Image (cartoon, rainbow, N blue to C red; front, side, top):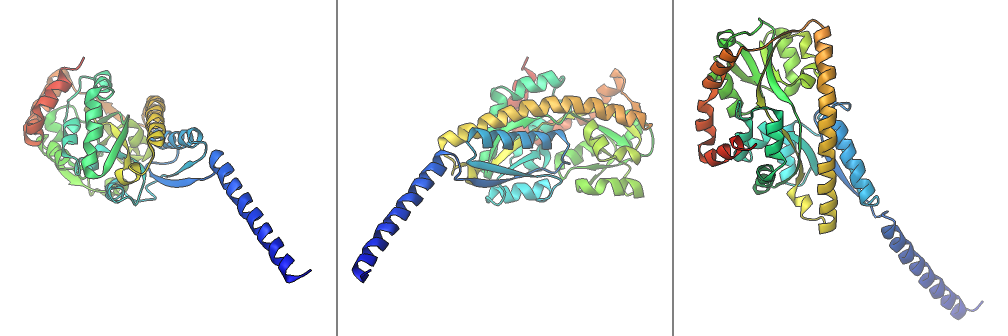
Length: 336
């Protein structure tokens, strides 16, 4: 074969291969095979309600985007504690997360309102607030910190537990060393109740209870059971001093790069996963409570008179941390 014909055949083959490659790329895009990967940070174990809801969220996003958007869930704080995750998300280093409000409020101060003790009448009241316009306003409030709020997860009601004595009265709180999240509001709440606050990382609480570095902590039933804190702190005061929801968020840097269609998909899946998480949470609370009771935990509750004393002791926090948000507090209390 002459060199001329060889070159002609070569160019024909090259054009054919390029055409086939473009066609395959087009078909792959149409079939959702042009995949983009993202990371989701979760600090709880794999079987925890929030983690399971995160997996549900990721699965629904993948399905509704025809496989174009893949979200990998990293549980057990593999990407860092919540505060460091939030900091990384602000710069786009981590894409999605579920976080507690205490560390998030360090970046978005208005969220302190939702952490005030005895803000809600009950769980039903809280969800009427968060599932309405007020909740949407708080989700939007984190955008100034480089984040986008997607939906609300249930974290139940937080109560006190300790290794020293059962709590029946406000006086029984006096002098106890109580671990709290790294939040000035939470620390001041403990001080207002006559106890001594100690801020420390979540993963250090068990050993600190075991060695007597702290006397107690405060959390919900599933966390109390999942961390096995009941093994080293068997006195549980079911006081439900706060109902602090948790927020599912995405980095604003990442969010702004999504198309309007993909933003709608992600938002829809986030709301669906929130419903799943709330159902899983309710089931988990029942199981967790039964588990710790079967392990000898001593549960006490406050009388109406003593609960009033707890409320009065913490009332000044509203002025201290949320004076400028007084109209919002009134809107929340007026929600029925």
